[in-house]
Length: 455
Image (tube, rainbow, N blue to C red; front, top):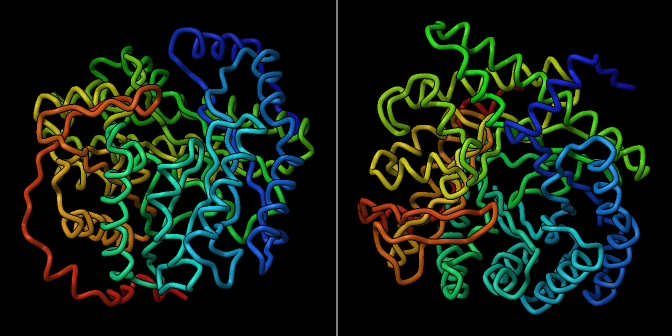
């Protein structure tokens, strides 16, 4: 398939890049590691290293060449691999930590930013290897630079594995403690999912699912600044007209991303997979989903109307992207990561955004409670209860939801965490600790809802 652009589209694209912060947020190569499985972890590690370094040897350079050819910034180059727990029948924590080091070393060798797939899918229960991987996560994330981890604990078909939810509360807490010298940054590389998708190119939740090809190129585009600029010109327009304008802008953003994805696929000889059209914000001024909501007419993000405006934005982005490409996938919509969005940070600092309002907004956006700092003395049970609430939203609504929460070590409400770069900074939000220990400690599995019986 060859994409042809008119001279008008080319000029619009140049303006979107130079003035309104349009970028390709990530190109992510998915790599199947099933053929690297071996009873001996060291043998598995050797095969994993060889396959990653062979297939991704030119990934960084190819991305640079495309940047130079088209003038389109590619912010991150990443790899997603088969969930590592799927490669082992039995393994110890030490075995898993060895594989984490192998993955980190291979990622460094090919010069990519992050590698996702230190993952386990445990929505109905644990294998021994999955339990060992989860137990190893805090040390793996505190002793590597590029590894990202995800655990799927719920699905609409399976319900919610509350034993896994309780365990993940403890894992999040321990991960924060082991990276306390960096404001708990290990938790920024860990996400707990309901209904995780197999082709997500965004970190920390990317992994190469079992339904994917041997290798694949998935692309994540951004562009909040482009949408914001469109809305600058729509004072007095009704909401139907606003939605239509957002849809058209999302169409243009998607066209750019598809061009990059297909070009990279051609250069690398790897199948083009999907385009994730999520509006992924950055800490840069003017590159904010919160600013878009305020341009739509919300006085302050977090105030009344925020959820409705976000629902409209998310829907319009999906419609525009789906019309521009037949291969839209991943998460696709609008992200609301607090620390990574300058407008969200501002709203949180001013007291407009609470955890409860953010949870309500996640019912209509692309993901969930993302990059939220809470007090360092928050108990594992309370973290688990927050995870459980978000999993319930995903399961009942048959959508992907996730939790990336940071219990900021030695910090309380109103203090700040600062991770730098795209991860940004954020105030620590206060929590209403409702003492959910009895609920969380019951364990077991919350059954799948009737929505899951749709065959």
